Length: 325
Image (tube, rainbow, N blue to C red):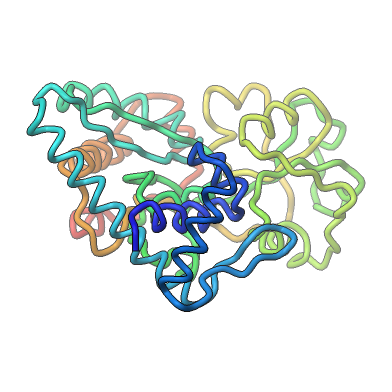
């Protein structure tokens, strides 16, 4: 097996199609297809199932991609180590996925301290859907993630340190015609703009509608592929959305968005620090975790009005769990 073949398999697994993988890798579709055919020929077993919507991994492919992701991660670490030997001034990189409400509250406090502590480390930060970040974390293009903790099946190969839980809320622009609605039933004729992956749609529709005895109004539900686009549409139109309550409490949104006071309650989510299981974090990642947890603990004692508002919308978990991770 060749390294480039394993890389192709890993990226196809995270992107969901050969076309998207080729675009992410900066090569042609034919190159990726040829590499995967050679890998299947060597393995003497089918690794991919091709269908109209893209490709999916066979059981053998799922087993191999887990090995491939570990191999590629180890190679990246080896390259980083050699780079430091070649040139002590070569910057290291720490790539972190961050859920938007954490990005707007705790990141501005953590990043400057981290930069002072490790000035040679270049930070690369991503925000967006946690479901899209899990495969990137598994295959190594993300080193850490501060985001939603999913089910055990989705979190396979990852390890999480829970930090807090929060409720989801239906959200509208301030002044929306249904800003004072008291039930989800009053909102079924409104247009919704939501941010989800295809695999999450059924769970999301159940949490938002079905569990309350309401059929999802799918002809009114629209998909935004970025959180910022979703929020912009809600701020500037009469569309509704469904998002973390702490996000609505941040300074950037609380003056323009309102969390609707509905009688229905929605299943809460947990946020934590996620990393690859069975792989020690790099020294830079370890230092970032330490500093971030220090800021979380300081959050409890902070007098900052924004942090206090967001704190009221989350339930922090017990401190002893943080130290034992």
